[in-house]
Structures are given as structure tokens and as C-alpha cells.
Image 1 (spheres, rainbow, N blue to C red):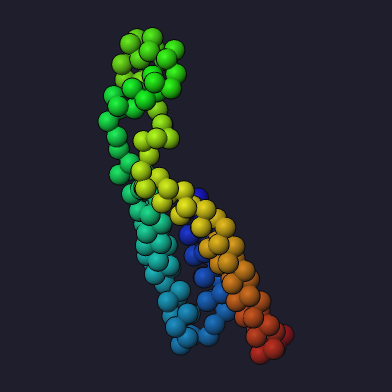
Image 2 (cartoon, helix red, strand yellow; image 1 turned 90 degrees about the vertical axis):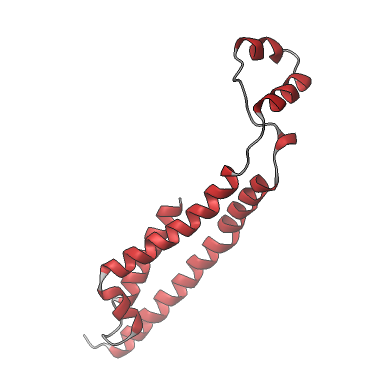
Length: 137
């Protein structure tokens, strides 16, 4: 999802900046595609780190989680004895990192992406109106 969003954003930036004349900073940055690739890689890296770090730091002792599962569902005792590495997600054992990941995703999906889409739409429309007024056919 992160790569799709950043690549779409990079395409939008390129298409809008291509409408500017040489000498404008938007046009000068996008003349070389390597600049857009660097920006795209940076945005992907930042969003990827924000996504992976909370999940990576959410580690627990698997045997304590097994005990919690067995306390909740005593029938799992036979499975745990047969498969000692049996483990899963127990809601009592999560920490702030999973909540951060959840709220980060909800914030991105509900606030940032729609706001960025609406803002990009207004920027493109404003630029197209400007081109319609200034460029003759």
C-alpha cells in the first residue's frame, strides 16, 4: 500500500511539475527523474519504517502466551503438548506498539490519504485553469 501511494504521488508530482516553465523550482526538480526516484524512495522508507517498527518491537515470551491460551481454552492443552511451538496473538499480551500501528493506519486511511487526494485535486485543477488562460492553442 505504501509503495502504491508513494508511486502515485510521484506520478502526480511529475505531471503537475511538467506543466511549469523551466526556471520554476517544480520543473527544475522534476527534469531529472532521478530526483523523483530519490523522493519516492525516501517517502517509501519513512512510511515503511513507521509501519514495520511497531510490529517488530511487539515481542513476547511464547510460553507465557501459551499459558494464557490454555487458561482461556483448556482444550488447547493437548495441542500445546503435541505442538510445543504453537503460538498466536493474545489480546492481553499486546503492548502500545500494536495500538500505534493500528492508530497510525487508521489515521493514514481516514485523514491523510483523503486530504492529500483532495489537495492534489485542487492543485491540478488550479494548474489546468492557469494553463487554459495562459497557453494559446
